[in-house]
Length: 412
Ligand code: ADP
Ligand code: ASP
Ligand code: MG
Image (cartoon, rainbow, N blue to C red; front, side, top):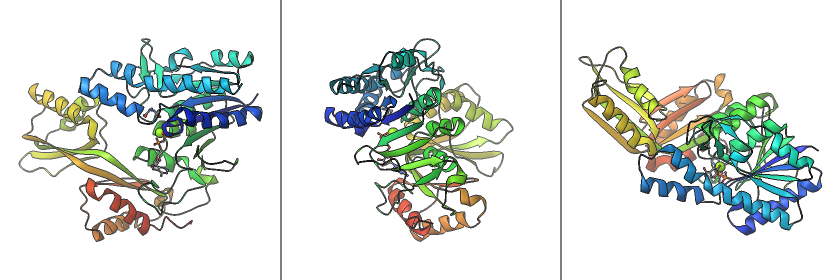
């Protein structure tokens, strides 16, 4: 029988009643003749609550225990979904990551899936089970410990299962009815896209559009998974939602396709470091080892052999970054006068494949922000994106102004 993967995010499984609604939708696909692999998130708010417990208990926590704790939310919804389906007379069974097993590397809290053996679940389908409900977001390391895939990781679980099982499609059910030109919750003029190219979705996701986890898009692109985002709250046709697809299949052609933001950024500045060969390696090596995800970097012009180095990282990694840099200083590997953390910044990015061939996009972006009186603190660009760091209080204004400036409310 053909296999379909259906993933339900936190709001779609927030209560037993919502789980019932999601299960009904699964039942419809089973009735059409599909064997279904359902991937579930934890109930809305549950993972945040668990992360809060961890931080309260141990601010510089052992990531193995973090994973043991935060993975548990998905176990509950997987069992509840299986029970709900059974109540509807659909033969279903739940699976935790280690039972499948979803084999990952040992990078706790942001593990990568390495292999999903299909034998166990396929055998059960062979015995008449119609739905395998799998707890998203979790796996097992070579050492036999529970791992998690990073926030939003159930999307990646879903795409990885679709690839491993050769599913006909991977449907991501969420609380919006597709991928929009920007987050519809902060820009009322945001427009739903019928299609978006993998490369653009990849950039939007990595720059903060949490509708899909970045790695899920990477995997879908690599394994040619037919990936669709749609609402679990509305009646759906086969054409509903947004299809993430190859660039050639997208009709729109404009310089900017979407605006992403990330609220949880921090800007760190090392004041007066010695400007010598190897200094960047001496700073960013320890940060990498401490698991700090450095994004934008600027090194200022040196004066009298000393320079300032600025970088951005997620705000919840500031403590880790400070510790790594202060330890490196204490060990005599680097020397700086001061370390300043600005935790009130946000990153705003304009993304579009059309930027490759059209000039003036950056100028327009900077002009728009300046017209709103918004100061740009750091800039970073790549072939298909421009990102700026600004004061967080201007974040929504910046997103709306850029959405207007690039006329994203109009189909193009
Ligand atoms: P789930 O719990 O289903 O995984 P998420 O909260 O992770 O849902 O992702 C869905 C949310 O992503 C939406 O509610 C929306 O606020 C946000 N979002 C951000 N950018 C976009 C975008 N460009 N298009 C659609 N949704 C977006
Ligand atoms: N529950 C996890 C999170 O909130 C994984 C997910 O929902 O995708 O990050
Ligand atoms: Mg999500």
